[in-house]
Length: 359
Image 1 (cartoon, rainbow, N blue to C red):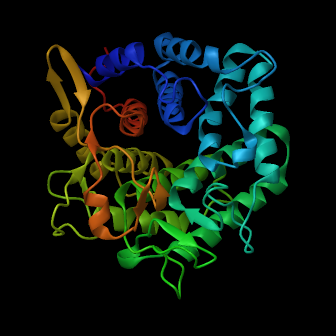
Image 2 (image 1 turned 180 degrees about the vertical axis):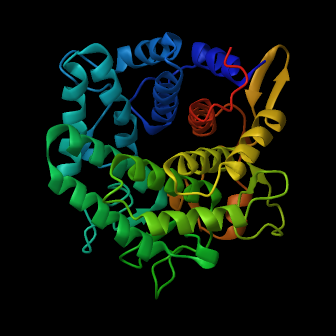
């Protein structure tokens, strides 16, 4: 089965990640479908997107299960598909829905320095995940609605977040606690201890997307530097370890979702002139499709995906952010956080003319 046939089959059988409630996990798939549609022009990707979003977006733009009072930055990510749907259909519901997400950001709580909290339930915390979840949407929305002050704000938040989470070897740690109240936070710096690969993957995707959206405003030197640091950690296999800067850590393993994110970011960077060539991204892509798309009982699935990881209390467990913690989270197949970025990487493969077959 080709990767594109896998994506088609996956989207056909996909059920909403949280029972239909608007969420970032579905948003990963929606982003992948948007980019596949743009890259290939094939109607099947748009049709999957329309079918999956139809029950979630009411005619007045209301989003199923969306509660802005949660102030959950994750919920913003799925909104990036709304701009493409608005362009494709002319239906006013999509920009009305985008307005609802933008209204949350207008009121979203911030640290004293001005960065969005990751969630209301994670006060004073900035996570790398949240940079991807919120800031590219904010910039794209600002461009659509002629609100340049929102671009100023997004880029200022990005610069501060990079300063606050700077880690070893040119990489970035998962999170920062402005209040120094969390057990996972260093009492002096507020930073968490480990360089989690998927957190850096979210960041890398955010940086290349912002470079594509606003090249005159995005931090291009810092983007190049991070991508160079990521390439330095790429294993001979073409993939990356779960704890990015500690390949020899007991229990560490090559993780698929982060590797797909880095494949996408590096391929995009090559197209934008932010990387010398596409070799590292292509190596990652080839490793993923040859070793992580596995068929069993007639169904192909993407394997080796960390199900979830985070910081602090969650479902009765305290996640301490240590390097060893990240090696102990459950590993699953066909999770949206891996498949969506692999779709995105596939779209870049098409755009670069490197796809031999898209059937």
